[in-house]
Image 1 (cartoon, rainbow, N blue to C red):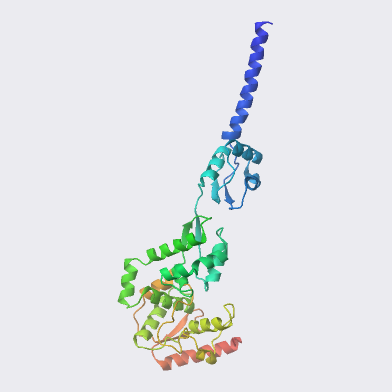
Image 2 (image 1 turned 180 degrees about the vertical axis):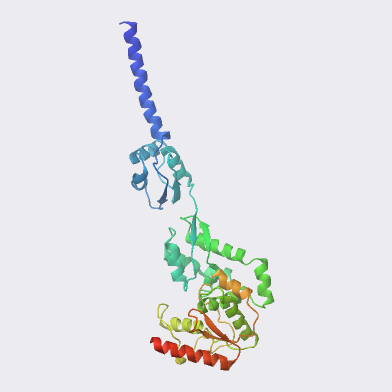
Length: 342
């Protein structure tokens, strides 16, 4: 056997070995992910589920399973993972094994009920709405934080929060409680103290202001009017509290576009036509703008207000009952023309 043949044979073996080694290296460390994407891994997902999910942005999804087996990896950690273009299967396996996920921005606006709030959150996180409701109404949690099933909504300050997608219901609840305490900083607490109001009272009034007007510019004026009434011992006579009382009786989805005279007699601690002072708790989740409107209420002499027919969406304010009755008459005439009976 000639040396030339031997050298050629060795060369072929080395070449084949090199090709096999290169392919093996590429399977482990080569570029596998073809574009930036987001991978959601549920707690029930298997490796096969992951393979199917990355099929749209992976050169060879089956290779992922091969590498996972070689690394003795069998159960991915749930979470929201950011996959980068050029990421290798080895990096992907390591990410899923360590649970190196990326938080997302969870946001919510004012919600009328805990159930509606839970539904809004369940649209953004892995947890379901029932788990959220159960967590927020847990008797031990409520007792430890001096809350009730009706007042617990006050710890939910509408904003955007960085939260892990697979957070537990209790973890999410505790996160909002922490943010609630952070929200009530020294400045806000001092302003509440000057008003001789507790946090709970400020939020209760803010929830009324929230329902009274959608105009941020009006909220400090409305807040000032109600503070005037509280100071003088008047009933607030806030229609939103009457609507809340109606829905307590008929269901939260009951439509009320017009408060009737008979509604003012509803026997409810939330009816501020029959009861002096603030309602027992908030009646809805107020925005930060409504809370700050109470804390920074305008100083004026207004005691009455009525929806404006000259500037829809705003209110006509009055200092005297005569002025208010004129404004109210115009508004009722407008309602009748619009055919709004309930």
